[in-house]
Amino acid sequence: MIKTSCLLFLPVFWTISCSGGGAGTGTLSLALTDAASDDYQAVYVTIDEVQVHRLGGGDEAETDEGEEADDEGEWETILTPQTTYNLLDLVNGVRVDLGLATLSAGSYTQMRLIIGTGPDDGINLFSQAHPFANYVIDTDGETHELKVPSGEQTGIKIVEGFEISENETTELILDFDASASVVIAGNSGQYLLKPTIKVLNTVEFSIIQGTVTTGEGDEASVVGGAMVSAQVFDGGAADAKDEVIVEAATVTDEDGNYALFVEPGTYNLVVTKEGFGEEVLEITVASGETMTADFVLETTDTGTLGGNVTIADADDETYATLSFRKAVTIGEVEEMIQVASFNVANGGDYSVVVATGDYEVISSTFDHDTQMSAVTVEADMVTTWDVSF
Image 1 (cartoon, rainbow, N blue to C red):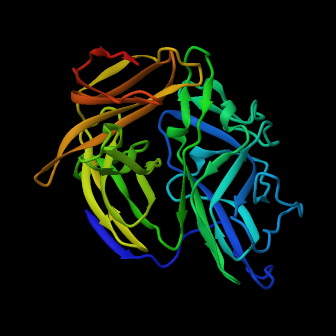
Image 2: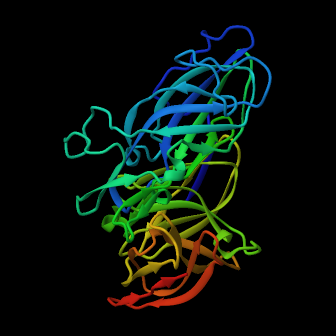
């Protein structure tokens, strides 16, 4: 069922103010949300600083410490959260305020997050002090520190330009994709943090929301923990790994509800949950629109697909992305959807439970050709599929 309505306002947890800006300045309002993952109980990331980059000329951005731009160019520290966030708390429309910054009016080319090396003084979901600045708690309750690869220790660059207009506020949301940002341990035994972040401008984005249930009538019940993703299929992509792009994702809450922030466009809305068959709906959403799409899942047979990933002559920080895809008919057209995805470090193992049927495994890694493999998953069986580059 689909319903649409005009988007009148967006829930936020902070107050916007432009009163601090002088002549020639505007305000940047920055918040954090997450694209969700059902692979972990928690994903903790510490953000120490937010910096912005502006090309040449004009007044410098004001900073919390009044510091000058460094020799690298016009990188300016504008916010210092120094906070440890559980990304999996920031789903279904929940956002957390990173802060407000007064900037010189003009064009900014990039943003950079400085990931912390020490946690804040808060507690985690077990009511314990954070053991690390960046870590995951898996579904078995085990804690794994997330190592920030050496190439990103100077900051995570987000190449997304934005404008600051005089005496106006620009609202941006950093959509931190937890699932795509965690690399499963390989030979080193270390989990890696490889942040995947999109920037959403609140003026442009729309909302898709709804409820996921199973059964009918008096037998109907809500389905919590279902993955809901907005995907785009491009059968003409030059590289197979780019044929299916997940633009946004979330996990339903305990009441079966979900909400996705997306840019205007047409998407394949895909719902998956272990023990159920996938459901797919093509949906088109306009700028500033709120659309409701509800889903009913049906139980199905499942099997397990797993294996090892090896990348010859690669270091322990090198990883492969595995995308598990399935052909579905949408309208009268056959397209591919993604039902699961993992980043696996060199030498690591993966395992996923999926509905029985035929799948295409797309494996990609830096400086190697993308691999495409057909795999059949049978009921109550473990299918081993190793990936080697």
